[in-house]
Length: 228
Image (tube, rainbow, N blue to C red; front, side, top):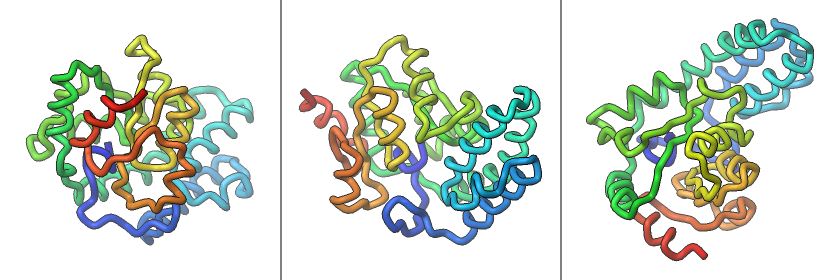
């Protein structure tokens, strides 16, 4: 959803695949502090600068440490609190990407089955996807997977795997805007199309092994028609 259907009015600058945005850095510190307080060794997460990496590593450590699912979930719920702070801040400043509705209408008319996978929370997805301010884009997606529906989030393939299970099919093209999307799609065995809203350079794009690159969703139908 974020970066593919909606986008920040003023996006933070990217250096490669790392976001350098001071408020988000403090939120990551808070996530790490909570994890360490619950017994996760600091060395497991100190060097991590992506929220998804912290999230996935903390859960894996807790599970491997033998904690019950109830205990793990309680800790992850606490780590989710600063995650939600970042999410709410972003969504207050987000707008629908140009070309989104045109692309979705075209895909629907061509008979494509569409589902949405997002690292955003269920609460945020349901609120934004039904809002007239965002074109009620949820109408195009009978099925959706959020981070609340998964144990692990992208770049882990679990969210995409869950969507493919819901759809009962594996001939999937996943459209996303980041390296995490590319990694998750490939690990799930899906094709990957990059919507380059982060303005990645050619070298970074090549490292994603994409099946295509677009600037907005209105370009997606033609690209899909030309895929082998």
